Length: 365
Image (cartoon, rainbow, N blue to C red):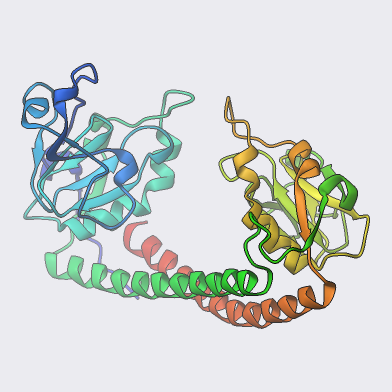
């Protein structure tokens, strides 16, 4: 699809750009009012209809927070959420970590929203400040955007909206399939926490030998090849596997520590993850064990004093339900059927996401 190119303009030339503020936390009368007060963590969806926190009129008047009109575009300037963006659909104010772009007659809020999404990697890269990188309103004012006719902007956003709707629908279907697996697990095995069906249980140290993965040097990290699992799933690819047998990988370090991945192919596992090196018994199918571990929620045993991390100790001391293997096999067959459906949906998701990314690149560079 060919897009005609028009002149570029700086955002500061066509938008009134501002930011908000935070009422003093020392004054409780400034909070729990009826004025939505938006923080960067609220910028999750395209359209923003509510906030997590609210302030009072007194809090608004005694801070640098300013009211914003609906159709104001917000973008996160600080920290882990840098580059997150939403279109405000209610009158609200923001804290100082949100930049506000008042509605313009030259660029639609939806077009600006997708433009910001396309530039997220750039914003992260350009962020300064070490542990909490940030971009400034001054920086955003200098960013250039192509000034397309409003009709062309609407055509582009309509196309992207349709693709995003398909992506959202597929992800919802995948989530529903995951819920089916959870429901089937409870139907067969009951509540793990109460063991209301009275199954045997055994400590992890009697069932498994756990091991941490191994560090992989940067020169051995590639974009294709053998999957490399880190703390949050596949991080890179490499030439040679660390293991070549089916097992379960548990995230050890990072925001998603405790997450569970069942693998059947040769992989490398970094020292940011733990894996089952050996099952000491034949009491489990991997599919049952993976779902059981998700329900056991290893993340709750993480140390959050610094970067979140878990150790092998709770994995070894926890009790694992051990239902009869024939029941586990029944659950495993159910999981395999679900996986077939998920595989088809995942292919559709990948294709649609690839098209979406391609068009974002074509439209916004």
